[in-house]
Length: 87
Ligand SMILES: [Zn+2]
Image 1 (cartoon, helix red, strand yellow):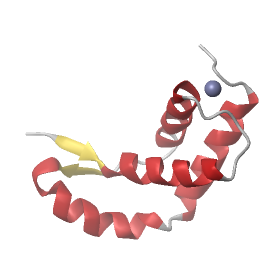
Image 2 (cartoon, helix red, strand yellow; image 1 turned 180 degrees about the vertical axis):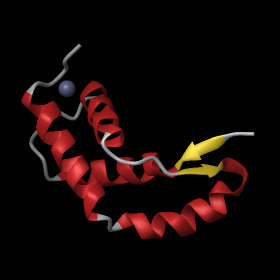
Image 3 (cartoon, helix red, strand yellow; image 1 turned 90 degrees about the horizontal axis):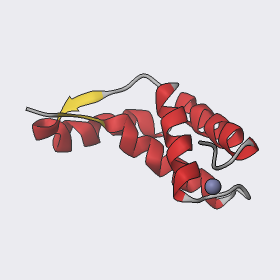
Image 4 (tube, protein in one colour; image 1 turned 90 degrees about the vertical axis):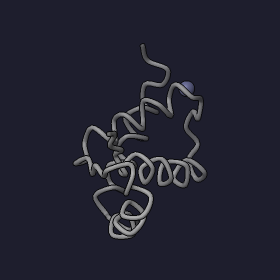
C-alpha cells in the first residue's frame, strides 16, 4: 500500500511555469527549497497510488487553477530567491 500527494505534481508544474518568467536562481537546491516551502504551506492531498492515476488526475483538475496554490508558489519563489542556496 502506498499513497501519493497529488499536490506535489501540481505544485511542481506551477513552480516550473512561474520560474519561466522569473529572474531568480533556478538551481536544484533553490527549486527544492521552493517546492518544500510551497508544499508546507498547502494542505496535502493524498490519494491511493493504485487509484491515484485515475482519481488523482480527475481530482487535480479541481486544483490546477487554485489561487491558493499560485499564491503559495509565488511566495515560495519570493522567499527563497531573497536568500538563495541557503543551508
Ligand atoms: Zn540557487
